[in-house]
Image 1 (cartoon, rainbow, N blue to C red):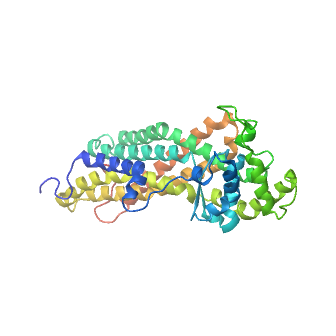
Image 2: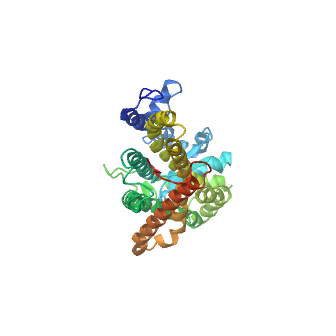
Image 3: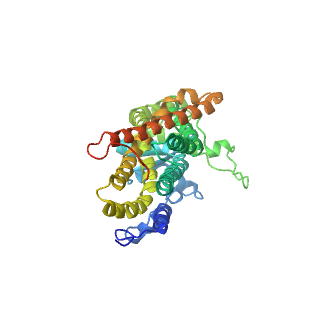
Length: 378
């Protein structure tokens, strides 16, 4: 049977799979313009900065602009709710629609975590394929040396690739855990604003700039039903704004930030993008062996191991998030952070060993000829 009868066997297809995935990630917004209208960021078009009268009108009418949006995507950072403008924009979105579930929070750290997850998963699959092709003697499960080599390979990957991922993920989960307290303690009087932080002087030319805080206070007073009240009554404005946030935003935000689905989706996409390009080479190699060596179990068993690894990826990521959430209370102590990462790496190593052992046991108890996990990776 000719080589490559099922799929062409060449490493370039795996390279192409990774390259095409990265290309789609970086240029998707440009590609979608081929069949859909272009999307733009309209902040400066909605609120012009050089016309004070028009700027005031737009600030008063910001809720009308946001009412035209289907969703509000918030690139969240720990400083987000300390900024007056950011909180005001969310309040404006909720003013008309009262649909807090349409506000999508996405931590800014998730981009680096996504990249580290992709690299870690891709390297894990690469090690698996190289061990399968060239490591039949080194990873022979029936020999003690093979078991030790397999454990060392797993330990090496988790000890080198995953600690940076653990560290950033722990930091992000710790920051997210502070959000309910930030909303509860939010005070509009101490919220940061560009104009007030610069003493109402433009930092580049020293020109006088209008106070956005007073304009926002005027809008909030209209919402509270006291449009004729004195703008300087900050206590009244604080109560009205805090009541608005507690009623419409706080329950939804707390639910979103305590639900792991918000983080699982990007992590699953990174794991899938790191895994699927290697499946092409795997199918090309093992598909030929299934036909040539039938009914020998080795290639069929390898197919099962690949599917088992794909199934295990979501479980692995879920365990990663659970370990991170369980370590939040210790992460606030700087002296414990390295210990937390080391304990998480050890826990993931033990989980990975249990994952391999479970597969070996399933092979060993399979009826028929499959009585031994011999040559599990060959």
